Image 1 (tube, rainbow, N blue to C red):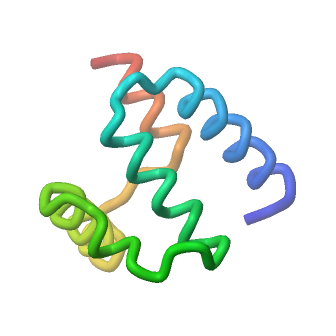
Image 2 (cartoon, one colour; image 1 turned 135 degrees about the horizontal axis):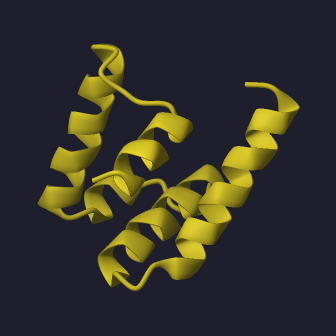
Image 3 (cartoon, rainbow, N blue to C red; image 1 turned 180 degrees about the horizontal axis):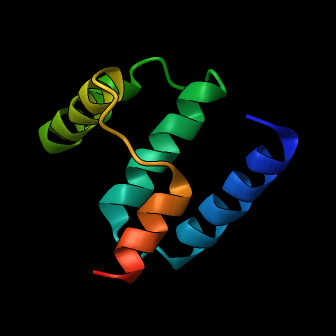
Length: 80
């Protein structure tokens, strides 16, 4: 990813996070943050079963090249 793409992704994520009201998603994101900072080595175990299933599903989609880039995602969402 280029620097511009990283900056755009970062801005999109910040905006999305600021709009979140779902405590479980915020908890999941906080667990990932803590893990990336080395503050929680057991973040996977702290996730709900549903969160684990969703993460593994996303990994599977990525490995099978069944993903959308950000622009396509937002376009499809806007046109749904």
